[in-house]
Length: 210
Image (cartoon, rainbow, N blue to C red; front, top):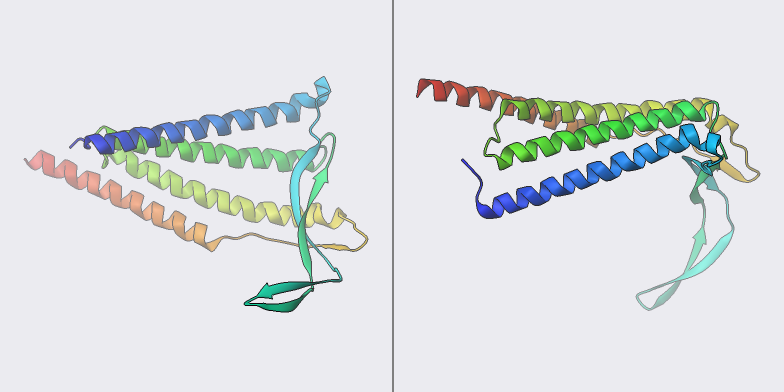
């Protein structure tokens, strides 16, 4: 059953948006990769490592907050910010960290590509294509991989790079991101993918019986 005219328009717009995001992300990754490898050779170096770290520092500052016609005193107890490591040419541990990030971006492109394939199959009137079940499972697995990557990435940074940060009055914070919501979302997507596969097999059996 083919989608209606309005649904076809929405599907086409979604396809264009996914294609645009994929091309932009691929172009950005290609540029960053070229700058990482060929930049120092041609004298075009990256001014930053793109490595951000949460830090906290003590401040003594007071202010006033006007709430409901009242002036209430405000005292800052602790301030937080992000520290950005700068380097003319990333060397040593910074290169594998950057390559790991490139791998994560590659997974994102892969997910966008799979989403576009699903959208196109829906546009052709085949939403329960068995391939869509596989694509959804791969999307779920990819989300799990990115979540685990962030987790181990933070562990590596805290072990090898964060101890090398030194400040006079700023304390680097060790942060490990483990997003349970992403894990649950990935598991739900994998289950939906399996449901798609079962639905496609049932539809195929019904067609054979008819």
